[in-house]
Length: 409
Image (cartoon, rainbow, N blue to C red; front, side, top):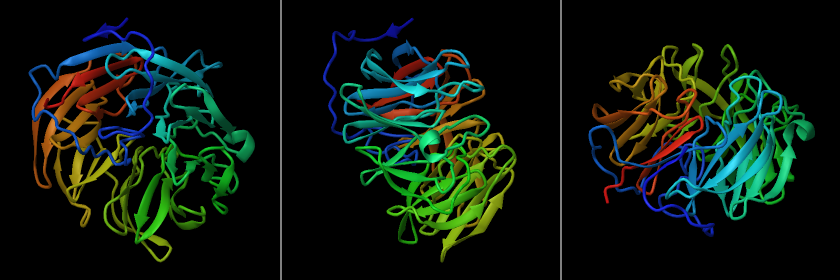
């Protein structure tokens, strides 16, 4: 069933492949930092929430977030039973949610928590996704045709852990980064055009741990920083050579939060299941714990460094931390286990518990809840992250996806 507002889509339109201002091109924003810039947004929402532009029921279910690039919205979903689960990439018209094309990207995880996890990464007219069974696939953004595919488990000895692979690929400098988790292949770089191996992280043989890696410049050194089964690691962005390693493991080796830079030599990491959060100080090929807090164990809700503060959802609350001291400055009222993004007019939170969405004005020292409403569509847990692009807020829950007008114009 589809609820639409505005003019229905009539026919297939060409997809512009150039990135535009306001695009959200990958996992947790175009810079992978949950910070939205360049948007002119409403400073407050109407009672009951912003105006819904459209709502659709997707063919496939997912926990992944949508991305928007070149006038098209891309999102993943999976269908089938536990033994024959298959993943699909959908290209939608962002004006009404109509499907322009769909492309299968291979076998998906089906044993438990079987919804699609990978958020697409879009760059240079190509889209990259990683299935829950470790298939890294490149698709043409215009026509939805597969360009290349690598089964990283078969080719690089990759290994699933408890709930399969949950990764959104990182792309830079003509390379696509993924984490098979095999011997000397915990992290690898493939040629973004061909899928051929560029480098592998020799010496690292830990399994993948659901983390989507970050490209960070730490102490002037450009590196890929990620969380593996037992460790946080940094590897040279050009060669894959391991630079530093820090032990970090929780009960299930579940580390879905992308590491965040919070100073020229400091990285914030957080994991659920009671492990908590740490700020690591990186120097001379080693990492030391500058600060740790067991009470703030962020399961997968994301982390942002904004206005000199670290925002992280853990321990049943969304906290603002001073990264210099680890002091909790405040907790966001009403946000319990919430995914979020930070926009020019405030933080938009989307809570796992009940699907409450809030607009919160935040500063380094205080906050104010401005508006709120609840999601009443879709199926399964509220595990996707809010996405803002070109004045529109996109919220996904399972098969349900809706667009809301939050632009000031």
